[in-house]
Length: 403
Image 1: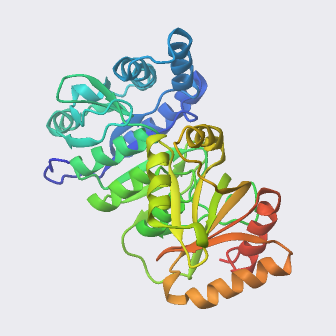
Image 2 (image 1 turned 30 degrees about the vertical axis):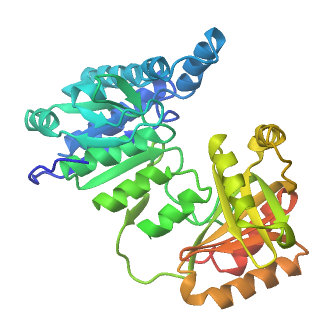
C-alpha cells in the first residue's frame, strides 16, 4: 500500500485533528498554537485534518435536498470540499505564526485509492513530494478522508477515513508516531460518561484496541487500527484541548490484566430462530438478505438456535425486505439491547471470566440475552435499561478502576 522512505532525524510525527478539534476559528487557532509550539521544539510534523464539525453532514444534506439518488462520484466531489476548507484555514493560522505551512489535497501528494466512491481503500501513498517539503522546512497540512482513483476522480474513504489517511501517511513516511488528536485525552477502560471511575490507559496492544474499536469504542475507527497494526505504525491518542501523554497503541507490551477494558455498543437488535426450524438454507438466506440491504451484522449458530445481531435502526428496512421475499421468514426480534464486550486476553482465562461475569450480573438481577466470545473478547447483550448499571458492576468487579 505504501512506498517506504529512508528514516531521518529529527523525529517525525503525523498528527491528525478531527472535526471537533477544528470546529471553529478559535479551535483552529488553538490547534495552530499547539503545532507552533511543537515546531519550535524541533519536531517535524505532517498534519492531517478532517472537515470542521458538522460540515460533512451539511454537505450531504444539501445533496439530498436536490436528489436523494445523487451519484456517488458527485457526492465524493462535494464531501471532499469540507477538508479543503479546514486545511486552508489551519495553514493560514500557521503562516500567521511564522510557520511555513502548505495545505494539500490528497490528490496532490498523491494518495491512490480503489475505484469505490464513498468507501474507497487506500492502495498506495507516494511520499516523495512530502519528503521534499519536510526537507525544505515546510509543514504539510493534508486533507484527510480522501484520495484519487485510477480514473483521476476524487474518492472518499468512508467513516473514520481521516484516521486511516493519517496512518497510511505515517506508514509511507516511516514516521515515529501517528498521533490522533480528539476530544478525549486517551483510551479509557470504559466510557467515563457511564463509569466515572474509568481510567485512562497509558498503553494498549493493537489487538486489544482493535477489539475495543470493533465492539463500540468510538475513539478510533477499526480500519485505522488495523492499518496501523499491519504497517507497524505506533499510534497515540491525545486530547486537542489538554496536555498529557495520552494512550500509546503498539504491538508488544509487558503482560497486562486479563481484562483491559469494556466496549459498549448501544441500540442493538437480536434476531433468533429456534433450532428445530434452523437449516443451512435459512442461515444463507438471511445472510444474503442482510448483505443485499448493506446491513452490518454478527451471526452464529448454537445447538438450540441461530442468531443475528444488527443495529436497531436497520430493523424497518430489514422487515420490509423480508416481506418481499417469496417465502415468509419467521424469526424472533428483540430490540433495545446493548452489547457489552470485555476485552483482553480472554482465551487464557475464559472459564473463570465467564463464570465471574455471570455471577456479577445475576447478583444485580440483570438478564443476559446472548453471549459470544472470541480470542480477545467476551460479549454479552443486555436490555438497554440495564446497560449502564451492568457496565459499572463489571468495571468494578474486574478491578478496572484500580491502577
